[in-house]
Amino acid sequence: MARLSSKVCLITGAARGIGKAVAAACVREGAAVVATDLNTELGPSAAAEVGASFAELDVRDDAAWRRVVDAVLAEHGRLDAVVNNAGITGFDLSPTGHDPESLELDVWRAVMATNLEGVALGCRHAIRAMRTNDPGGGSIINMGSRSGVVGIPGASAYAASKAAVANHTRSVAIYCAEQGLGICCNVIQPAAIMTPMWEPMLGPPGTPEHDAAVKAIVADCPLGRFGTAEEVAALAVYLASDESAYTTGASFNLDGGTLAGVARPRIELG
Ligand SMILES: NC(=O)c1ccc[n+]([C@@H]2O[C@H](COP(=O)([O-])OP(=O)(O)OC[C@H]3O[C@@H](n4cnc5c(N)ncnc54)[C@H](O)[C@@H]3O)[C@@H](O)[C@H]2O)c1
Image (tube, rainbow, N blue to C red; front, side):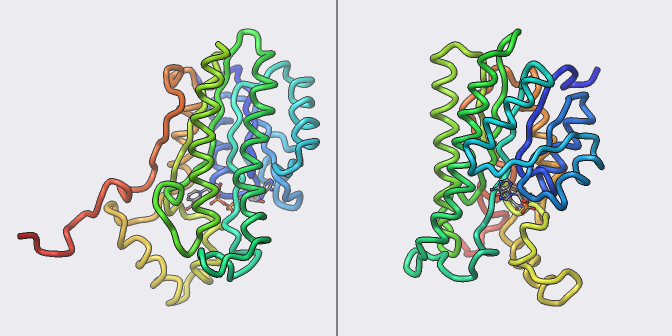
């Protein structure tokens, strides 16, 4: 039996990358999926390709959240899972201003607005909608990052935003438990998942620079490769399903072992 049959899922940042893969996986598991994004060029065709409907949603916009969530409730009568996936590194906005010393306040604020405020708004509107579910309950899945666990000097705003997402996840989880809502909230913390997000950092595919950059990144990963969006989507499906009903406030590292330690010691001990 499909693991998400009769569930209604809303996914942000679903025009490409991880969000699109999550939308596809939720559709495959029988959910009615509303794929959302601010990108109205890619979004509608991406949604159609995976069998989801599309709604324009800039996660920074409180009024847009209200409109889209109300439309989902009007059409489907409930909302079971919200995947707060939309996020930016800020490298598209500016190549500089990402280390703690040369921080540019407008870049910092832009990253926080999407990655942190967008997730906080998503949690608020998810709780509002899920409160009305009958039968009750729901699942909120936030997209954090390995960068929210360790310091990343070259992407300090991004790293700070993802650390805050992880802790907001815990606040939401405990709040929903206190309220007896049956709503779980968890955070997925991927590292190095090959998506278009990496393009500004890796350079054009097929070039020696690209290959060298990929090699340098996977050198620190015990499993020695990039992850795939589908591998993230598989975890999102589990967290959206009833199989994870006893799991809340948890952080899931999806990083090829990167946070567990190094594969081989680089120095001789003793
Ligand atoms: N790819 C990785 O290696 C990796 C690692 C750790 C965490 N993540 C996180 O996973 C999530 C998805 O990453 P991805 O690699 O698929 O990125 P991506 O850049 O390929 O896709 C992100 C999507 O979010 C959308 N988006 C951006 N700002 C938005 C906004 N304000 N409102 C609505 N949509 C918006 C974009 O239009 C795009 O479709 C992000 O939160 C990212 O930080 C990714």
